Length: 390
Ligand code: GLA
Image (cartoon, rainbow, N blue to C red; front, top):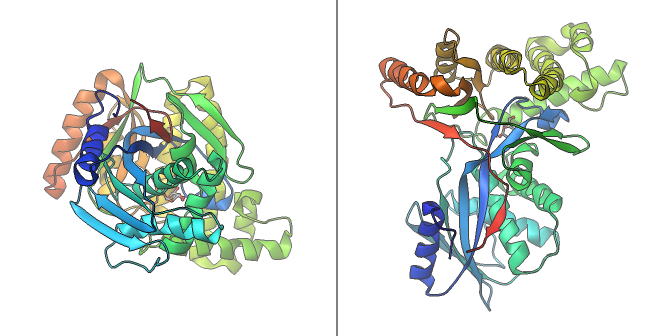
């Protein structure tokens, strides 16, 4: 039985027991927020993510044969296939489950068939990493069910490769890492090169983190994400001619990029200028957070947004509008777009006492400008992927 007072977990559990008439095991993988450090992960930089109270749940039980039965509870759809046939499906959602099985196969890890019902309360396409949560959840569950012997870091890396290879989205490691390694009331400072990490306490007594969801659905795989990655790689190639020690933009400085402006051309130059600055900014921001200087930390969030908007060009008018609205609000220390971009949410650091007014003002402004209701999520930081015990 799922934990009491978790309605979403109960819903997934009930769907499974009704459909398959047996008792499953239940797993949870949270979505993530990221305080600062965007697109830095695949440039070997730093990120400051945390796992939150919106998650994907899998109720799951093994089978004796090789059949896989999946039920997407929120969509009321099912999909079945044999383990030996991992052909890409026509429906979009089973791609993520298949990507995990593809990885297991490539790594020679043997499982049997299984039946699963899954779903959750993590908005899809809102920049909170629902796909990473889904892949991590299934992989974590299969690891437990079939005693595959993977540790948490192996799960993270394998889930990332699942996304890179089968799904075709060349994401970095942040989302999977945050979903699996998240810790209650803490943000993770992750060095995406060495994978060393530290937890920073993030108390919510005085400030809240509020996400404003533009409802613009980003489609990262189809979008410019992979192109940004290539543009950064091109920048590294150019810098390497003069500085052989530069293996990624982590090794470069804004000055070095400036020096090679002409060779890079305007687009690659803008991307690399932003990225080298952003990698430095995350380190400075981490210090500010430790010192408890949230006002200065908030300034850095605005700087990041400006760069993502004008130099990295991954924002959109709805995100820019929402960030703009907060600049004159004294209760907001910082705001910016979050995640891959082109839609999804802004993240706002808001004084607790001003939260209600903040949400009201933002909803009204968004309604007036775009004629769309603006969902606001007050997030709390929870533990990462785990099995839920009754
Ligand atoms: C997506 C990717 C991550 C990261 C962010 C941007 O969420 O999956 O790896 O690059 O975008 O920071």
